[in-house]
Length: 280
Image (cartoon, rainbow, N blue to C red; front, side, top):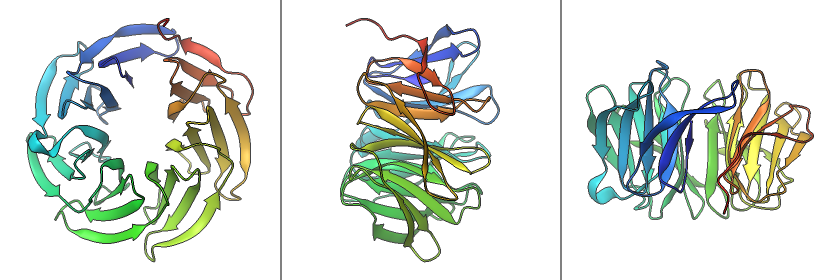
């Protein structure tokens, strides 16, 4: 599933290399599209300030969550059980939503700058948010209370993921670095360097051993989380990479400025165009 500046949400068949259908259209730029754990529904969001619950089979709109005066939705995350969603907005607000009831649980106004990243912990009890000036905040999803706040980067963190144990956080930033944090102490444990542009997206493999990063420098990189070393480089040669993911078979997927979705061999090398973007 992909979200685009052309406002559309599209559902793709990776094996068949074909478009299944356009799932829906937002009123402004579509920022994010996420599958719910049930495999039947999705949440999509964008600059129009709407978070839309959609049915995958036909794109039917099941519910619309409106952020109102809280502004456009920059980032979105879903709890592992599919019951909660956390959104980050251009006003600096972070909102927790009850997906099942279609209602707002908490509005957290702790940031002074636009939100650039959000993620939910593996146990669904906590959320992390990052804003464009480099501040990170840890929240209790159940109460809406702030648990920790620290200045993690010189520029905004755009990619954030929790490790499987929920005790560590990985952030990728506009200062070109990737950092591993110990959430108990708030300390930086490791720093991964190699990108020459903003690290815009991160994905962690299911076993937690590999980290995939995508950057505005036009490359995606694979990292060994045990050693911190870079193990593979994927060069799009066609501009910034905005989205990265691991496919079920372990290969790497990227989406970028050229509106093309590519599949890359896990060991590095040239990618295969799965879905080509429209011509200029």
